[in-house]
Image (cartoon, rainbow, N blue to C red; front, side):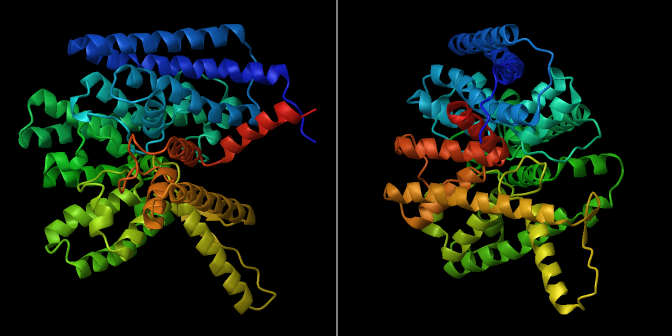
Length: 500
């Protein structure tokens, strides 16, 4: 029997939602300042309006629903799922007001793509978009990569138990530090330090390639935010192909790999535990999957002769592969070239890389490599149980930051989440095929949306069907939060309607 949520439950959720909206609203100050510095009057008005809307809504909710009670698991999980939808609607306001999106739905699509660090876009005439609005697109990725709720945990939430429930709801089960609020603050500290260093390096490369000092700094900042947070947005419509620079491509590959690493591993490296990177099961699996899958991709591309030289294979083949595997979505080719030039095995290798993703507790999407590790460890254990004497007590361990004993609960959860991701990929594929796209095209675009990658074979465009846009928004939302908080939110809604 479903129990209908009480008024108290709704009040607590709305109160903390108000805090998150205030936190999100304060981030509008950054593009607003950029608009004023660059004398972009209309965008400045757009961001001023967006800031006031967020502030008014956030303050109203916190005042009307003020409470001192903590979040329980149901409230925390449903809050996270709902707050990401609210962030999409509010984050889309300045995008839509800019006039570069055909409809508010298109603006919401790009807002969700930004917050979910996906990279699929419906923006029109991107090359003439204002600097402030372009910066906001990338800032959404920077916020979403660390986590919208992480903003609230860092500045507005001080209850440890409630903070942990929100933290887990945002698909981050591992705490870098014992205190989850300190964990959130550490994630932001790491991200900001990398932001300063990475943006400087990219700006230097961009300036050396011919961009003005101001333009190079702007491009370096935007590209870093999308590369480290494995997003895929770029200031120009040609994406990374716009720069025609090997050093720029190498730098972005490094940032994509850096963003695909578990934040807990970042902490280990920062505190001097350099050997962890050689022992960590996720990193080992990441390297193996890169070598094995790209070998298949390279063999397939070599057979077609589309990239005849090693440098071209690296810049066109390996770059797209790493972009797919890290869930970034940066491209050095045009979208239509995937269908025209990539043979069957190479194309499927790219889909496999997208579906797997990178590390847990990183900025990537997809199934995640740790779940793959747990599955194969469990499979190996079952084989050993058959081979070894029945009296043998088998204890399996793996090294992930520390020695971890493999338990049945871990196997069940990993397998369940993996199956849900596969179901999510199938959902988008079915909708794509319903509208007449070929199976390979529909599967590629669906996996890209569900795994929060952002590579496109040409389906994603302002002219695609409305239902397909909504499907991809749903996939990006669910894929980023990894199901649990979404299911909790749906459960609460059903209980509200049918519960007793």
